[in-house]
Structure formats: structure tokens, C-alpha cells
Image 1 (cartoon, rainbow, N blue to C red):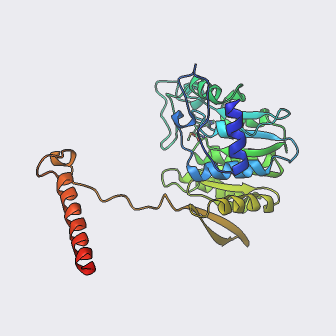
Image 2 (cartoon, rainbow, N blue to C red):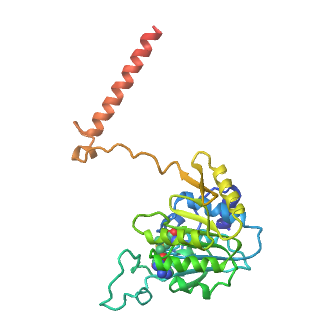
Image 3 (spheres, rainbow, N blue to C red):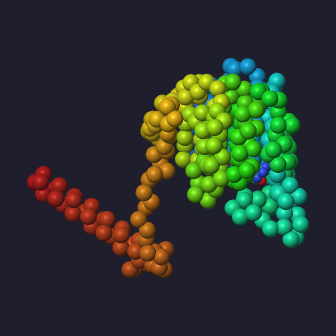
Length: 310
Ligand SMILES: C[S@@+](CC[C@H](N)C(=O)[O-])C[C@H]1O[C@@H](n2cnc3c(N)ncnc32)[C@H](O)[C@@H]1O
């Protein structure tokens, strides 16, 4: 019950608060305990987009590449009784990944995740939700056998980093997405996986994908009307004016919303020399010298203020 209340509170406020109340029987106790790559901005955008779809007709939710469930548990919050949530992942199966044979040459730059197990995903998911989604342990190309054409309202593509696989994912997305459906691609601009970017832009230039919004990690798009997605993204930006910054960009004759997280860009704190004195507060330590210097400055200011009052 507390978990439901929390989800409702988040849904109402639109603020992502990744603290869930979970069963104590599980080793995972909160959302934060789940490993993964799902940052604050994308968490906020997913919730904003899925919140906006609440009153739309039933449709399927899909995730390609779930890892340990960090993004899947958020998407799963929005599953309605008359819908299915299909999660496709190889979950480390060496046969699926083509590396079961000892002589197999791994493809350079491919993300294999060989230590991942389906059990890890399922345990995490059940820490947050009462039942599992439709879990398909397979290559992503199999997704079209589990979701009806034109039925998906939200697809998150976060699986392979190889051009050929992502190009196939793009074709599946086009087939599965319904008119007002939204697709989100991960890692659209990372230097160590150029195949992802190549496949996405191929799809945008030659196969009808319309990019609508960009975060530093994900590209949000549609194959139909871009306006509802654009409105949802603008709503999320309006809800977080202190944190999120918008830049509008013209691309292929359309507007793309570039969303920047102002906190990510913060300069790191100046580094302190890594010697033994850093950790110590004994005489001569860097920390102690800093405290003394700060105190001396504060005292000097106080003395100056007193002298002006006198
Ligand atoms: C970056 S992780 C997903 C992260 C997850 N969405 C999150 O937010 O934490 C990529 C996942 O894709 C899976 N994967 C890689 N190649 C795949 C393929 N060809 N088909 C299906 N899953 C694949 C991996 O097993 C891994 O779990």
C-alpha cells in the first residue's frame, strides 16, 4: 500500500523520487539499490511522458535491454491491467550472444554482459512490483514475436551497441509502435558505440523516425505525430526550471528539444593533494591548515566590521 501511495504521489507531482517501499524479504530494499544506468533527467522524462499517456487507449510497453531492471521498474509503474510489458534481454546467455564456443571471437565493442542473469533482473523487479512483466530471454530481434504490430505506446531501446542489431531494433520499433507511441533510444551519442548513433540517424533520415527530444543519454522520438511528446517534454522542463535547461534546435526542418541537466555540468571540487596529511587533522595537515586559514579570514572580517561600527 505504501508503495502505491508513493507511486501516486510521484505521478501527481511529476517529480521523480526513486525511493520505493519494498518487501523486506528481498535483498534489494530500495530503487537506489538496483544497479544500472538511468539518470535523473531521463527518469523525470520517462515519468512525464508515461504520465501523459495515462488516459490514452491501452497499448503495450516494451523494453529492449533491461540489465538489472533499473529503468524497467519505472516503466512497470505505468502498466495497466489490460496491457502487457514485454522485456527482452539476453541476460548473459552465451549461446544467444554467440560466445558459447570456446573458440568464438567476441566482436569488438559489443556489450555482452556475460555475468548478468535473468534471476538478478527478476529479483530486483519483484522487490518493487508484485508480478513480473513478460520476460523474454532472447536477442532483441525476437521482440516482434511478442508484441503485435502497431500496438506499443512506449518502447525503450537500451540493448545492443552494434550497428546491425540497433538497425534491426529501429525496424522493429517502426513495426510495433502505434501512431502516438514514443520510442526512446539509449546511448545515441557515445564515442565508444558509434553504431548506435549510425543506426538511429539512418532511421531518422531514411525510415521515418522523428527525433523530438534529446538528453545527454537518450534520444526521444516518434513515428507519428510529434506534438504530444513535445508537450510532455516541455511539461517536464516547466516542472524543473532550476534543474533542467531547454535549447530548441532546428533539425531536418523540425524543432528538436535539447534538454540539459544543469547539475551534471557542475565543475568538480578542486582536488586536494593525495598525501597522508589530507586525511589527518593533526598539526600540519591540509585540512587543519584550511580550517585555520578560514578562521583567520573570518576573524579578520569580524575585526574590520567591529572597527567600522566603533
Ligand atoms: C546498458 S544495459 C541496459 C540498462 C538498463 N536499461 C538500465 O537502465 O539499467 C544493456 C542490456 O542489453 C542487453 N543486450 C545486449 N545486446 C542485446 C541483444 N542483442 N538483444 C537483447 N538484449 C541485449 C544486455 O544483456 C544488457 O542487459
